[in-house]
Length: 356
Ligand SMILES: *Cc1c(COP(=O)(O)O)cnc(C)c1O
Image (cartoon, rainbow, N blue to C red; front, side):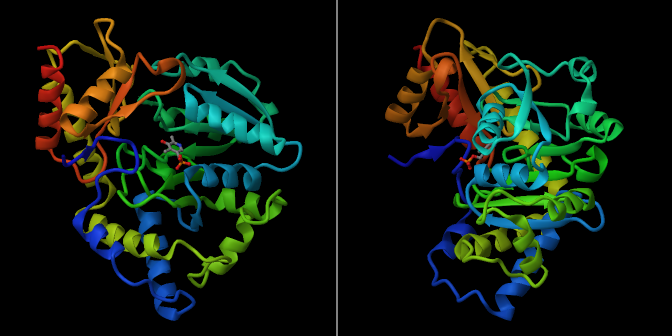
């Protein structure tokens, strides 16, 4: 049975990406590879709507590696972080801070709920160096109000670190308009590439920080990447194959109209699917949903995990199960990657048949 991925990474890849993945890799310490890497940086900065003077860094690591790099290079010894925690990806920021000795406080948000900004404003923000948030908390499908959070950061002089791993190219994001200092994303979500490459876009303010902070890691010390990146190189062997595939995707996205067109596409798929399942016994879980996915709860005492298993075994349709406390309450349907409205219709139809 042919499977279709409605997962949140890896996702369905485009034929061009698959074809490139089957070719011999070139040696990378060459002017040709440098030119390609510099082109990737240029296009990524445009897609992130980064302010003049921003830089992008490409890490051979999954998205979590870029999250950790942002924290240990953005916050110095003694700096305190404020973290929005509305699910497992917010919790991941907390765990990174704990392991790396970064003092932190959290604003806990109930799973599936939006963040009440007055709770942030009520805090004494002068105690903090940085605000950490996952633009889209992928475990629950909630999209936070990054524009308003950015205004709060700007007013209080906080470094604004945004994990946009699953929001990038799905939800409207502009580093300039939203005052984002460090934007994090990775290869296996809306870019629809193999996992293994993550990206950080640093604003000029973030660059000043990174150059001043002594990082508590050799591999993730970003100053080296910035220096070598000036000539399109990296300190260590990069994920050469994914960088080539990324180049193909970035050029295709830029040629097709850029980030706005990608976001419109994700929004179109999300609303198509949400319309197609109307009348079925599911409720949407997220109060302010991202376009990247639809998080659904079965209404009738049916286990969400069983829905995932039935769809996989009977139809080859792979939705994304939840873990932990949400295992039986929530499953997620991704709208990223090379999916079509027909794919989503097939899934909606299968969901309808589970109860007949
Ligand atoms: C996927 C994802 C990550 C990265 O996870 P990795 O498994 O390390 O690639 C980080 N944050 C969010 C919000 C994500 O959706």
